[in-house]
Image (spheres, rainbow, N blue to C red):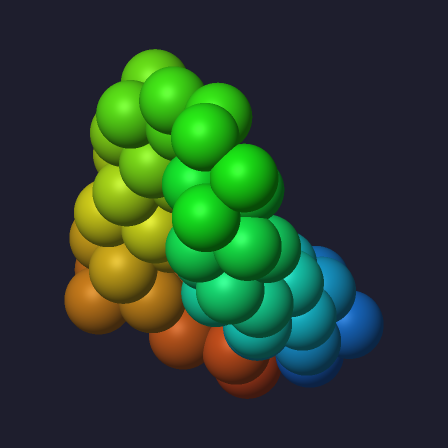
Amino acid sequence: MAKLTLSKERYSNLLKAERDLTAQVQELDKMESCGVDCTMYRQMIADALDKISNIKTHYSPISQLG
């Protein structure tokens, strides 16, 4: 059975998304200091980061089918 993999470009995009989401946590800190409840946003980011972590665990950045 062929192993599913990500191209280097898609893997790079995945890492960028991870960095972008992590940076958003700092923005949430600022929003909360203004009195905004960010609990829902924090959970959404945590869920997305968990999914990214799982993808990184199970897929390599090298495209090799077969």
